[in-house]
Length: 301
Image (cartoon, rainbow, N blue to C red; front, side, top):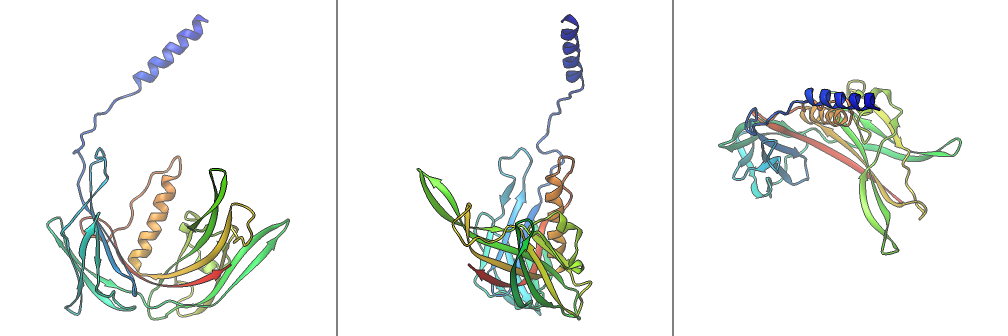
């Protein structure tokens, strides 16, 4: 018994001897930098977000930046400007640039001042969409979705594909079973198309990112699906209202950002991983300025 007590005492001493308390200077190594996001799409409101990073000891990691002058031009002609709303959010009533259009975004403030060209990708269209519910022995099911995509030969194109599942989820309140309408980004179980393979897609289960490297200028049929199949009955914990397929043609900046973000989040979720850097084209700061076009089709149940 005495030997056990001595061993325990020695282990505690060794643990304390190997532990070092490090005082953190809140300002040391911290460089407050602007964070700017712009996701530009035709037929959508022009939205911008601008914050500033804070020290790790601050209760809020981001501080909104107000009074930023945000304007965009085409061939030197002013197309619109944005007004500050709240919480770092800026909006504009001016129309967004059209598909295929090139603009110049100008941002001016004492803490950030730069000008970037933004190329809006050309239109994208899912042709001849179709669905199928496939039985997999010994009793499983797979919901398959397919469509044709015509890629343009004149440009390098980048794509993002995901599936939204609108459903009534059942909850119990006060002994009563109620339904709540919610939309989730559904997990994609895979694709039959080797030409849209991207290693990051193994890490991010809710979207497929791919380039036109293997389909440049061609018309190909894409097929993907999910094991989280729609439910039309009231059995289980949800009933499907609709499935929405979203295909985006994104510019290169957004493509790099989405890839890095998926890798970063995956590494953070690993017990031995550390989040890596995320692509940014914001001069002297963080975030991304990008553009995309989109096509959707709804499957009603």
